[in-house]
Amino acid sequence: MKLPGFWLRHVVTVEPYLGVGPTGPQYGPETTVRAFVEEKTRMVRSPQGDEVVSAATFYARLEATCPAKSKVRLPSGRRTTVIAALRRDGGGLPTPDHLEVQLV
Figure 1 (tube, rainbow, N blue to C red):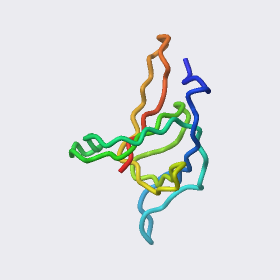
Figure 2 (tube, rainbow, N blue to C red; figure 1 turned 120 degrees about the horizontal axis):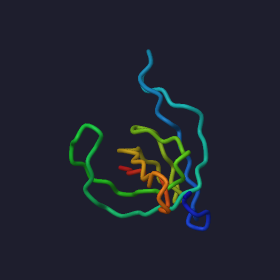
Figure 3 (cartoon, rainbow, N blue to C red; figure 1 turned 90 degrees about the horizontal axis):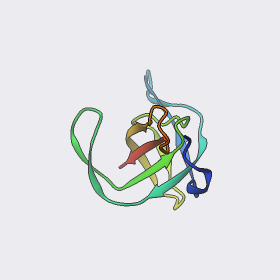
Figure 4 (cartoon, rainbow, N blue to C red; figure 1 turned 45 degrees about the vertical axis):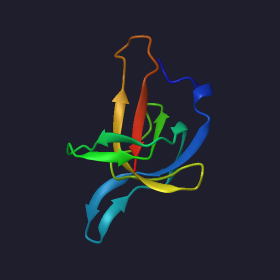
């Protein structure tokens, strides 16, 4: 089951991280993603296993592309970086499947 559209009240802008090139970090084209944004400070784990502080999280549909280190602009205008993007997929169960994106 997809995350219901009425939950996606915000729009965030994402520049997906592509990797490191000869001139430094490379990013894909800027895209807009409908999401639900929660600005809340909490401790999370990075993909490397380090404990880091997340100042915001957004929830989007699973088809959103937002790998770790991507650049994000929140509806407030604040620019931030992705710590981790976690797939929450119920595997066919009637759950709201979504992508949880933790931000610095």
